[in-house]
Length: 132
Ligand code: THU
Image (cartoon, rainbow, N blue to C red; front, top):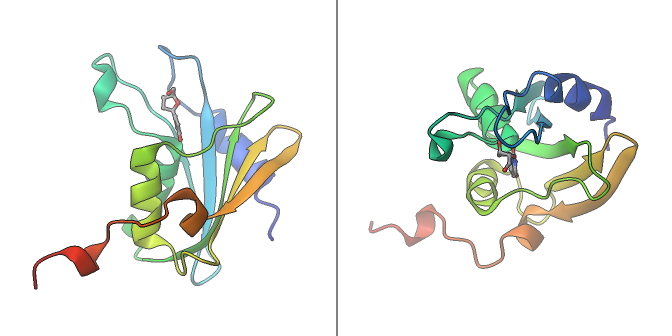
């Protein structure tokens, strides 16, 4: 496991969270070993908010990569921030291997809990269910 926590804390500081005051940072490693970061950014129309995890995935996709091997998600609370349901679905689409790709939930002191994508989203909907 790479130590992605310092970078995740840096990007967390850039979060735009004036409504919830809940700042989240995420850093992932793509299939080529390159890191991509994201923070949450909220909107006065609350539903338009984007989570840190999806912002990091967007940065990876924009850089031309399509798969990630691990992600650290950090927030400054004792229990950290396990990815929301929408983020689990988005993370599953871009995970290199749902049974191996790890999600590390962290606070500012370290990793609180780690999961595989398959653990976070069992029986996932994916492209194999789309009409041929
Ligand atoms: N948030 C994330 O960035 N990631 C998650 O997995 C859960 C929630 C953000 C969205 C919103 O800006 C704030 O945390 C409170 O829900």
